[in-house]
Length: 350
Image (cartoon, rainbow, N blue to C red; front, side, top):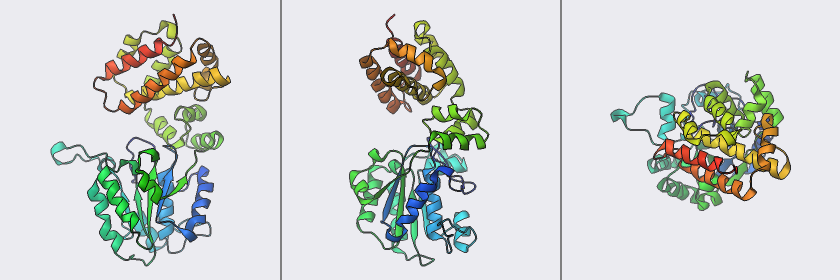
């Protein structure tokens, strides 16, 4: 099964992923909880670092008939075979239809778009599962991913289940946006932070996967190795990134309307992402003399930062944050881009 949380909508099928090299500590911490497991664990951390893979490994190890000394599932017992064939009677995965559809890639009848939300019926269907006794006599495990995709009714329905916990039923909620979950749900879960790998470990892993210039690929995704690998393999965002960087390095020559025109086929979220990182580097160059995301452009960034007012830069970063929220449904993508690029141009006095 491939369970990477490395895209807006990512799928979970194909082969089961072993733990990533940066997950050893998280794994040991999870194993340390086994003696006193809560009813619900909230696995939270940055997007694209393998939280979902970690949850699947933990679920399988909880259901395994003879886990190894370090807690890793044996991959040989009946329970492991069922789990890997996605037919384990004591396991459920709850995810938006759009995720399942991404795996099956079949259009829904009538061309209706599959939902990006987790609906209340999906959570209600769990109540019969919650009341059954475990088929194998041990734990039953439910993974909800991404937990922030639950709509309000679904979240309230889950809350009822969490308020009257069933013995040996474990919920694993996986999220990179815990702030979007109901506070009442957060208070019923034990929070478990999954850390972003260090630059060295992340880059070394990407190099092993054959990614050219792994340091740069990693920095561009905010140090999320799975997202970096996904972008490198698909080439996603690479072309617009080059066009955009060539232009924003020379704000004096920047023609916002022409640039918006050449970027109009690209996903607004990629352009915003790149602008956000560029501006964070400018702010960092201004305040600390250091850059994080574009090390190869540090001279340019330090020079540009010298000519920008901190207040204006902060205001533009706030504008980018708001734009990012609207990035998936801009009414007019081209105008949307023009307005952001004009704002960027105005940071630099002529």
